[in-house]
Length: 540
Image (cartoon, rainbow, N blue to C red; front, side, top):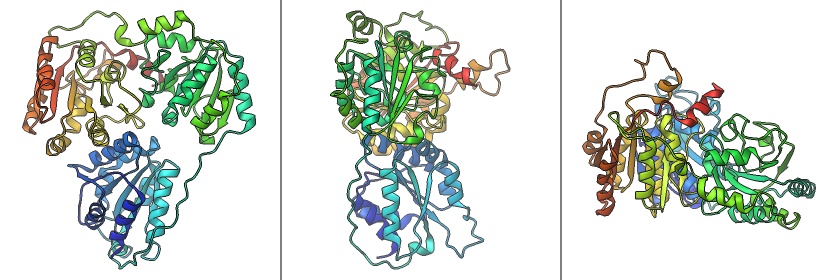
C-alpha cells in the first residue's frame, strides 16, 4: 500500500458519501483508491462543477462529500466552488494533489495552503507516511464536527511513499453543546413576555423541525426560514415561508409586526432581514446557535444562547407558558389565502419579448411533481423559482449563494440529484449562468439523470441591466442564443417557451419515459427589475 491508497481507503471507512472531480496525474491514485473502497465517484468536465456538486451533495444528503483535484491549476479551477462551500460551512473534504517539496520550479507549484486559507477553507496536509492516517482522520473530523470545508493537500512524493495499513482509531461521537440553564430561563422569559413571536430557522435548524414546531405551538409563534432552510416548515399552517427578500408581502408584514424574533441556527444576514428593516422597531431579538462567534455577528441581539437548536427547543418546551400569541384564526386565514407570492395578483407581462417569469414559474409549480429538489443559480430571475416553486422539506431546496456567484446552478442541481435520486431535480438558471456552466450538460447526459433544467433567458445579465438604469448596457446585453439547441447538442430533450401554450412540451416530457433530461429555454419578458433585486441593491 502507498499513502494515496491509505488516504482513499481511510476516507471510505470514515463514511464519506460521494466523490467528485477531474482526474489528472496528481490525483489519479487517490481517486481510484476511493472508488476501489466503495465510494461512488462522478467525473465532471470542470473542477468548478465538481466542487459545487460535492457541496450540494453534502447539503442534501447530510453526509460529507469529497472533491478530488490535480495540483495547482486543478485547485484554482475549483476555487469558486470551494469558496462557496467554505462560506456556507459545508462539511466537504478537498483532496488536492500538491507538488513535492523538492519540486521548487514545477509549473504547478503555488502556495496551496495560503490560497485556500484566503477563501475561508481549512488547510490541512498529509505530512509523511507515518502521519498519513492521523492527518486524514483529523481532516475528516474537522470537516464533520466543525462543519468546515477542509483542503487536504497531498504532496506527490508523500503520496507515492509506502504506507503501513492500520486500523482506524476509535472516534467517539461529539455531543453538541447544550444551552445553559441561565440561557434557557432567559429565552423562556422573552417568549412568555411576547404577544407576537416569530421563529426564523436557518441551516443550523435542520434536524430540529419537530422540536421547533412543538415549541412554536406552545408559545404561539409563527414559523419562517432563511432561504437556505426553505421547506423546513412547508406543510405547517403557521409557516410564513422565507424571511427576507423572497418573502411575500404578508410574510413581511407579519414578521415586521413581531415583538420577538428568535433566530434558530440562522445568521440574520441583510438578506434574511431586508437590511434590518424587516425586524420592527422595538422588537426584541434572540439568537440560538452552536457557534458563539455567530451570535450578533450581523446585527445586535438582546439575547444570545449557545447551544444545539433541537436540544434548546426541547429544553424550552417545558419552561414556557402555553399561549395563543400570534396564532389567531385571522392570521391563519390570511396565511392560507395570501401566504405565498403566487397568491398575490399581478399584471401578466407575457408579450413579444416572451413569457412573464411569474406566469412561467406558477405553471411549473403546478406541472412538476411535488417530490422535487430545486437548485437556483444567481441573477435577477432567482426570486421566482426560490419563492414560487414549493418544495417538500428542507432537503428540497439547494441554495448555493453564500458567495453569490453566477454559474453554480447546474452543478448544484447535479449534486442535489445524486444526493436525492428519489426526487425530480429542477435546475433554475439564468441564461448567463446556464452558459457559464454548460460544460456540465455533458455530465447530465452521461449520467442519464432525468432532471429539468429551466433557463430564464432574458438575453442579458439582468441584474446589471435593471440596476444601472439609464446607462449604456452594451456590456451586459447579448444577442438571441438558442440555448435549447445547446441542450440538444449535448443529447438532452429541449423545448423553447415563449408563451404559456409552449409549456405543452414540458407536459409531454413529464408524461413520457423521462429517459433523458429536459432543458426548457424560457424566453422571458422583462420585469423591470424583480422585487427582490430592488431590495437587494439597497445594500450596494
